[in-house]
Amino acid sequence: MLTQTSVLARPGWSKGVLAQLLGEPDLRKKVFGRTSLSALYLESRVVAAENSDAHQSLQASLANRKSAAAKAVVTKTNQLLAAVEVMRVDVIVMRLSEVHKLAIASYNAYHEQFGNAASPKSDAAFLNRICVNFIRHELTEYDYALADVAGKIGITKAVDGIRQKVYSAIARAYPGFATECERQCAARQDQA
Image (cartoon, rainbow, N blue to C red; front, top):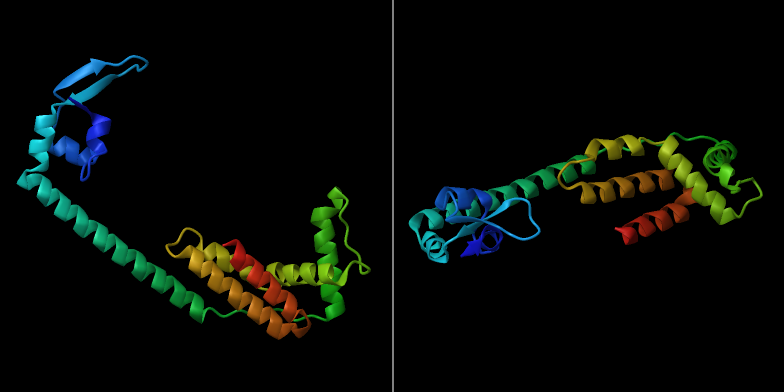
């Protein structure tokens, strides 16, 4: 006798195939530690079902569905990446002194409670980082672009593409932050 779990572990079996080809179990038995009865199937009946034309037909149908699903994933991923490719990234350009002031204020609004306040006298690399973060989140539509691709097939590649486009646009709009944009983009790719 084979348990339902052991039948499902065999190649080509699923609950749907099991219900279609075997129907009701040959025996239901109480197993220690379980509240429900275990379904048991005669091994000879399972083997006969595996050798049947119906089983072969179900496997061929499943293979066709898997192939179609894989093609759909590729198509949807390519469509999403094509949309990212033509996506326009606008960056609001402000005076650098204003960007610094707003980036510091934005950073402090979130981090000051932890004793991590930024100021114009903070380390230059740190200021560049928070300025690029501020520009990315507040002076582009980066967050909206990420929300648009959320849950879609191909999201990982799409997010990478969006990030690269946004960082490139920031570097063009604010050449003084180009190195920091490259650093952040590379760091994000390394995390993925």
